[in-house]
Length: 141
Length: 391
Image (cartoon, rainbow over all chains, first blue to last red; front, side, top):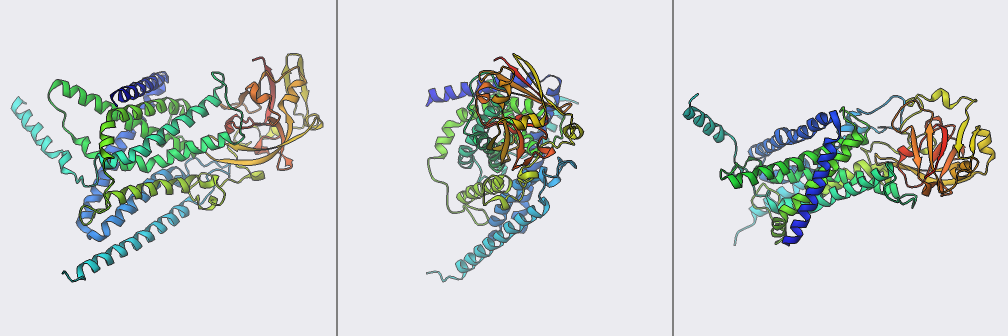
């Protein structure tokens, strides 16, 4: 185990060092690359993560317990999917001379997926609520 | 400001910044992080290996490359994009599960402080490179370039940083990973209002599956219609999408000029061939996919002359490399070199037709290269020159 960890660690460090050399070799554009690397960390740690923590706190304050797990599920599925879809939803790369690129109705597509996800969330929430009601009304022995 | 006032300010600040204990960690921690990690790590390694393969194809020379099966690159690059897409929900939930540790206070003992800082740096590199790779890769597949750096070189360099950081991270965390797998994830929620750990994990797998199907299922027949967020519907002129149009490449007029000739240069001299000259040579028909680095691919039936037949006119053999040049005035892909292993294949064509019709201008009329198992950007269009290069 110890040997395997050392070997893995050495392999990782070697690849990491080689990557940093390649980054250093990028020349003047290395500044722009670093801005994006640091920006990615900041976008997560300073924006996305606090927003999610805030959403969680809000959820705990205003939403009844039976509704919370389905809403968490909705966020876990729809949140990352929306981030993945940003380049197509914005159609930033669309070019007038190439109609074969970004050629789907993305807003409609996203709305369809979101509607299905919301519908499944509602079904899950109603089932959770009924289970809770059954729990509460069952006579205790 | 006196030292005392400074200390007081630091203490007040410290009291305002949350501590790891302030977070609800019912579902967080190593038991969640490790279970997601065993999927996220392999996803990154798969991205790295398929990316390395794509890079080798685009920079041939260092070692022999497989010229088939014809769909090989379609599969490896499809996996590259699919694994990257699947990694997005995995990475986000994994980061959520360890986020409280961001607020850990550094220890004061010098040796532990150094270790703490080293770990912080390695985690910064891990998160920074992972987010960079996923963000730039996804934007590139939609041909969106909101940056000033060279995507290919940067994505390649940071790819090494990412995979190195992942492997190092696994080496550091291996004992915690083993401990986390000591018991199956809880199937009951710890208290009302939180999902169980198993349910959170299953939702995460579902999120990855939905992201992959919604963006990349264009590849799979039957699922094409549910790929609502795919960068392309997979159709175009003559049934194939276009990456760069004739207008975009500034060759729209050159391509339809009747005075067009293909200049073929080799050891025994130079010939100039018109489209009719090429059509008078032995014609071959092949079914080959265009497989783009962006992850999409589409198969077509191409007709034309084998590269080996054309270079034979000027003394070229199947052990020579062949460089083809486009008429397009600029662009990184106006030229590509076909290694001899592909020159030898009879399905490496200078294509003149697609789906039984003369090539559409956007597919490279009057003549383009089409070969097996190579990235679409190397299938040079609107050819003007073919040159035999002695390997």
